[in-house]
Image (cartoon, rainbow, N blue to C red; front, side):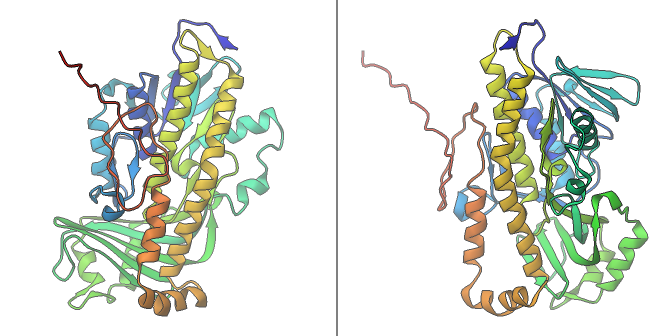
Length: 417
């Protein structure tokens, strides 16, 4: 059953981060109507780096031999700017638009903004980060419709966003003593240095275990003074024979201290609202899977939306059909995201010698057997992501096969005259 209407199916994306901009590209490719709302500006000077490469149809994990795609590390802000600059229709991206209220009903969903304007559509996508406004609105809508649907226990459970580590991250010019295209990891008891080196910059991170876990409801806003204290604590630790962290810190061009929330939520959607990226799940960055999972969410959701719109070319799907599609999206994503979460958590704790088991594994066992088993595990996990099913590209194959490969194009052979 569907609604006959002259208005096309419209998606309201909230948040112009990685997941939001990737979804915007996928929807434009499918010719699906949308608007993208961002409370600030596109590509703000936050975060450090993102590692990987995007082809037309899928995110490829940055292990060149495994995928046959080249490795690429760049500043997160630069990556977001590229995604925005390459959008065919930038008029659909509205900045300075902060959400005030979301109203979900049988026929449509509307988003009221603090400037008094209202955006109406058929689906709201919360890609607004770990402290998501849309997630809070979705929880409120769910509990109003079904009291207790999102319980306080669920919000505070181990599946909710909990920070056990924080991270001092930043960017500095290339320094003598570190390779120009290397990733270096220095493991210690309770903290880890991780440096991603490019010819023109070093993207540095210190992952540090907190004395006590911090839940998302206890949000901590770190100051520049907090960052200075952490930097001073580790200033004399060596990154190479002739370089200490203090040298890197003093030459930094930008840095900040952030919490590293972890968790996979129980519910990714309710009604006409669905969550993607950090709004629905969060991992530590040691295994470089945060950007991967956000991009995959956008691809999987774009496939679901495309299926909905294609099934009703002369109208709109009903709310029940939207619910079915969102349930399929959640069922597809949750098991994989839990695996990504668990593997990322393991790598973080392994590198920080979180327990005697991890200490022995990192200090004695891995040096004997090498890193290949770990690299292969991460490569295989990366190869199992979704592809954008309505797009085509010339896909290449590495040593680890894609679990959902791009079908080979049918070549047209001209008949002989």
